[in-house]
Structure formats: structure tokens, C-alpha cells
Amino acid sequence: MNSPLHSATPSVPQLISVIAPCRNERAVIDAFCDSALAQQLPPGWQLEVLVADGRSDDGTRERLAERAARDTRLKLIDNPGRIVSTGLNAALAAARGAVIARFDIHTEFAPDYLTECLAALERTGADNVGGPWVARGQGATGRAIAAAFQCRWVVGGARSRDRAHEGAVDTVYLGCWPRAAFDRFGPFDEQLVRNQDDEHNLRIRRAGGRVWQSARIHSTYQPRGSLRQLFAQQMQYGYWRPYVMRKHGQPGSVRQAVPMLFVAAIVLLACAAPWWPWPLALLLVAYGGYVATASMLAARGAGQWRLLPRLPGVIAAYHLGYGVGTWRGWFDLLLRRQAGRGWSRLTR
Image 1 (cartoon, rainbow, N blue to C red):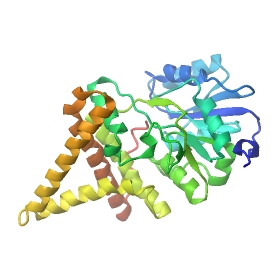
Image 2 (cartoon, one colour):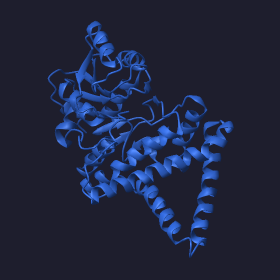
Image 3 (tube, rainbow, N blue to C red):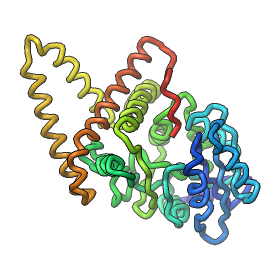
Image 4 (tube, helix red, strand yellow):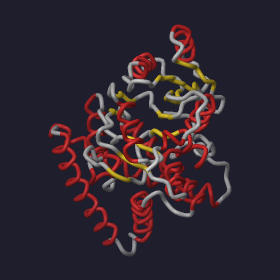
């Protein structure tokens, strides 16, 4: 098997480019830069970090400029589109590396993160590699959100949350690609405010490429810290799912359609409840039992039983937010409304 690293033809060999979109992240931008620039690379490899700022107005942009002036490995890229997909593409266009790795401002990376990404690309010949999506929340609600995030009974058995999984997957957290992968499969879809990574991985797989998850690649993601923020985030993820489905004629995976079907069942049975109340009651009882069981499993998996009272609300926010958002996306598509009205403010 030929290594994808050897097949690339970058302008600067043995250079890995980290790309990261951000907007209004002044509170965490220094910690991110410290983590990214501290990556320990294999001999012969060099690093550049390109942060695409979406016209921040909280001092983030000025702080990035200050740090870039002191460290030539760090580069500030302008992102006039202000959303993740345009920021990724702006940084990608300026990147010079043989390998491209996406970083997230709210994620903490192990010092050998990039080294393990390079090893996985070399070992597997995959077109995109990454590690498991591991969440670590702050505060009681944040920890409950993280516990539910990692529970397979909440997220439909998504392999991306399985810390031990090693193998081919539908999609992977963040990602690390040989530069040639973007020449073959194209850049990120700038019509998508959310789900641009899932759509890109779906595009890779439909074209015969491979996406690989390695348990040796370690990072920790900081999820939302409140139910309101979680619900809004999940509505955004759900909203943009129909646009991916329309583009490719299929969802990224079957589990992504379940919240939409659940919300539809609630609405339809609620409408029929005045004449036929039992189906709605049975559905709600069944879902209540499921949420109670999933809450206990999530609390046990996290080793934090004190989170149990918070988990039912968190799990419902995950499912209902995603389901409601998906239906709103379908309505906007069917009614040919402008996509994403009011849905582009959150860029994280």
C-alpha cells in the first residue's frame, strides 16, 4: 500500500498544517495557541497553525495578531464568512503542509496528537483519520452533558464516542488528511453552517475513500455548559442535516433520522390524543423508561451518580433539540426559504 503522505505533492514537504476556525474566543484563545504550538512532532516534521478568525469583536483577533507577530508558526487568517466552513476553507487555502489537521478552539489535545495522526495515516492509508470524540464538562450541568455525550444509549451507538474503537467509521472527530485528499474530494461545503465535517466524510466514503478512527489519538472536548445552549446547538445540528441529505440523497447514518421521527410521532399522536389518547401516553411512558435507563447508564459510565437528577433533562435536550431542528430544516427546504436565517450566530 502506498502511503497517502508519499502521494501528496505539497509545496513544502514534511510540514503539517493545523487549521482552526474561531470567532469571539478571547477567553480561551491563549490556551488553544499554547496547546497547538506545543505539539511534539516526529523528526523531520515542522508545524504551522492557521487560525481563521471570523471578524471577532471581543479582542480575539488582536490577541492572535500579537501572538503571530512573536511566533512565525502561528498565522492569522481572515474569515469574512464568519462560519466554520468558510473559516476552514480560508485556512486550507493558505496552508502549505503535506498534511492538514483540523483543530477546535474548545478542545485540549494530547502533546502527541499530531504524531499519532501521522502514524495512523501511514499505518492505514486512510483519507481521513482522527481519534474518539471525548467530552469533559465543567460545572454540574456541563458534566451531565458530557456524561450523556459519551453514552452510546443516548447517541445511538455512534462509534465516534467509543474511546476504544480502532477501525473504519462513518465520520470522525475533527480529522487529519493528506493534502491530496482535498484535491480528490474537494474542500468543505460553505453552504453548511453545521455538519460540514460529516458531509465531507460522507463525500469521502461515497467516492470510495476511507475514514479511520484510532484509539491512540487523544483529545478532550469541552461541551456546552447549560441546557439552553445544548438545545440551541442540537437544533443547529439537526437543522442542517436535511441540507446534507438533499445533497447526497441519504443521511450520514440511520441514527441521525431517529430524533426527527420521534418528534413527528409526538406531534401526530398529540393531535390525535383528544380522540385516541392511549398511543401518546404509551409513547411518553416508553420514552420516560428509556430516558431513566439511559440516565443511569450514563451516570454509571461517567462514575458520577450525583449527576443522575440532571441527566433526564440533558438527554431530552439532545433528542428534542436535534429532532425539532431537523424538521425546521425540512420546512425551510420545502418552502424554499433562505437557509439558516438566525441560525448562524453560533460558530463554535
